[in-house]
Image (cartoon, rainbow, N blue to C red):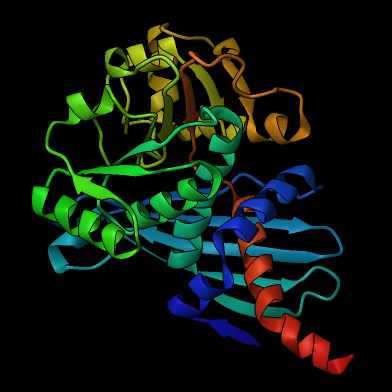
Length: 320
């Protein structure tokens, strides 16, 4: 059985290949049951979350991800997200691989946002604003730069020192990146705004979005959490990763729905619609687009299969 730790998982999931693999999986006959989502009490701290996400392609592969999210892990200097992915044969059930779930989650999340941006962001989008300084920050920069000509990156975080550290790490990768403290002023100029925070209150206001802007909302994954305000969803063409996920977990969608700001009909498409051509994505240069992601098990399965096949491919060649 193959075991891929964090570094090995990252190496096996190159951005262009991962984005394409997720796109193919959204076109496939993948079976994706509703994920298990449990609150876990942590005495004296914010509640943690336990996620179990199964998916399979009949006769091909079966996978399940087990992930924990501990929001207060920053106090310990630890990542908020830990997890593992178990990949098995869809023909025999034989376990094939255990893959680092944290790295898989971070990379497939960023790659899915980049896949959405391929359809929704302007073709000339060059200024990326990233909100959040966790492990997703650098991933989002690299993923978006794979599908759009990103030449300038701004990083915002509640802790300016962390924002500067993320910008420094981005510069080490060759990006023109700077930390910003003026969130409103920077958001008004950005072509793509990518939010990867655990915020429970809006950070991005719709009044700040310039014509042609693309808003990428990733971090808020509970109905009580939110990264954008009512005006942002009201002004934008709304696309989600999956309708079922967005309508059960996405506070950025559920809260304005409850308030009557939008209706379900205002969710114009999901990623299934985009990749199948049922919705063409951006239709006008000045259109404001919004993508809300809560994560889908098929994205993890796509990444796990890619990692497994990438690592095993040299051995398969030797056998032939």
